[in-house]
Length: 84
Image (cartoon, rainbow, N blue to C red):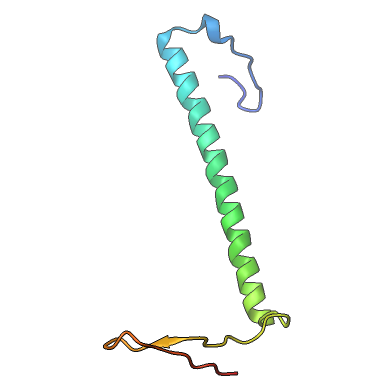
């Protein structure tokens, strides 16, 4: 039985059709798993950063929201109502 820790160099050209198919599928699965792992790492980093920012509070350089215009639904008229 071959040692699982030992890596063998396999020549793709010497494989039969089934061996080539297994080789290609294995490489595809490894690549896909790697991409999913990296994507999940980035998503976790984003969630942790959002949680940290939420706990620290809002940015002091951003002013409070200001309503600059309101519209009545029935009449369609615009009533400007600036609040500070």
